[in-house]
Image (cartoon, rainbow, N blue to C red; front, side, top):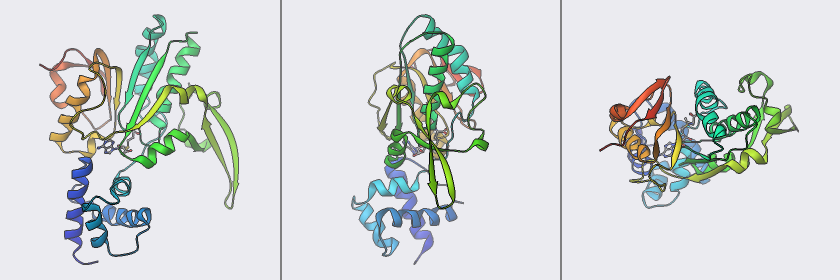
Amino acid sequence: MKNVKEIHDKIKKLLYSHTGITLTENKDIMISNRIEKLKRNCKYSGEIEELLKLIENGQYVTEFINSFTTNKTHFFREDFHFIDLRDRVLPEFAKNNQTINMYCSASSTGEEPYSMAMTVEKVREDLNSRFNATIIATDIDTNVLQYAANGIYRYSKSSKEFPEWIKPQKYFKRRIEKNLAGEDILIKANDNLKRMISFQVMNLNNPSYPFQKNQFDVIFCRNVLIYFSTEDQNAILKKLFKHLKIGGTLYLGHSENPQDLINYVKRIGQNIFIKEKEIV
Ligand SMILES: C[S@@+](CC[C@H](N)C(=O)[O-])C[C@H]1O[C@@H](n2cnc3c(N)ncnc32)[C@H](O)[C@@H]1O
């Protein structure tokens, strides 16, 4: 490899132009690892400089994006948001037998939207209601979306991913898979969960989003803004905000905040915001 700094700078530029993701200075090891992943994804064994030229000319762009996104997630991550959804938001819709429309804006491998769907199922059971719910789940990474749409996960009894108020056996079918290392328990989301969610590819850095004004009652935008500059975080939040109803709920990740929306929302809990008015 020739000039590492030049290569990393070119990657940062390309990544920003395709996704809006800003890689900070101290990401050199991560970038080197992702270069290897990129080459594997493209089945490319030549020099990285040559591969970057191809990407600049529009080839391997999907592989490039998929190699450089960070997809860490798990079921019921920051579970207080699902508790708020269960106790405050969903019962209103159940009581009035009203449809709730939710949006999960960076759904990664699907654990977040499936957790939303399980929370809906839990409220339906507890309140004996069949209120309708829709979840649109988007991500820029086509690999994770495919994984999410399959809805099959490795389950470890020790993982403590599911809170005590959720019984995963109600929502997933179990299958044992034998392999060289022994066996794995696989769990597959049932049709009730799957029917609720529609997975779509979408770039949050696009100038606008393909949704209607005030389409959603709830928006999850968690642990994705951290990959963007402050300016771009604000731009994304403002675009998302248009699609949230007045009175709707915005859930942000633990180190994210509503920034320029601050005068238009009411904070009601740990990174839980209610939309009070439109931005004028
Ligand atoms: C760390 S995961 C967070 C997943 C989930 N929201 C959670 O909190 O567990 C971040 C996700 O954001 C997605 N992402 C990054 N840049 C994006 C963009 N410009 N548009 C849409 N999704 C993006 C990545 O592909 C990744 O799956």
